[in-house]
Each structure stands twice: as structure tokens, then as C-alpha cells.
Image (tube, rainbow, N blue to C red; front, top):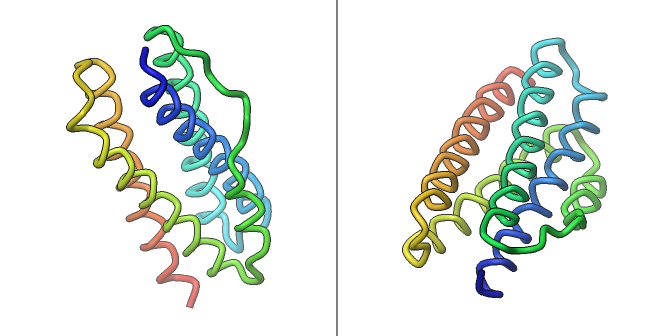
Length: 137
């Protein structure tokens, strides 16, 4: 595995860990049962993606990082719940953008397929959070 690809996958993995932690914290303060379950589901997704990224790294001969990205502190610094959700979705869009930038250079079919599905999963969660934010008032 080349260093550039290993670094890219580890960056994504660290971002997913951070997203999972953020979602865990937001779930605890969700203003409604519907929002609680939505955020909990999205948090499970983040954990799944982080685990699968680590598995892809190992499969390709890389070493998974155990770090968590700094996104957690950025979200904690936002004062209101809606602002935290908006930043969460910006983070989700960042992941999609990074995947789409790298996909043309990924020649390994299994990894490329996984990353495409991961990006689609993030798009679904963004849409769900955006819809839920409309109900916040």
C-alpha cells in the first residue's frame, strides 16, 4: 500500500471516529425522541465506516491509525444545537468531497466500491439531518 493512500484512508478513519463521538454527544442532548434515534443511527453509521476503513487498511497492507480527528472539539465549541448539526453536516460533506477527489486515482475495485457506498451513506444522513432540522423551528 502506498503511503498517500494509507494516509488518506487514515484521515477518513479519524474523521469517522470524530463524527461518531460528536453524534454520541448530540444524541444525549437531542430535543426529541425522533432526533435522538436519527442521531443514534447516524452515529452507528460513523462507527461502521471507521471499522470498515480500518479493515480496508489492513487488507491492503496498511496500518490503521487509532487517533480521533479534531472535529469533536470544533463541534463542542458551537453554542447551540442547530449550529452543531449544521457543522456536523459540513463535516459529512467534507468526507464526501474527499472521497470524490480520490476515487479517480483508486485502482483497487473493492476499495473504490466501498468508498462510493460510504459517500452515498453520508449523503443519506445529511439529507435526514437537514429534514430533521426543519422541525426544530
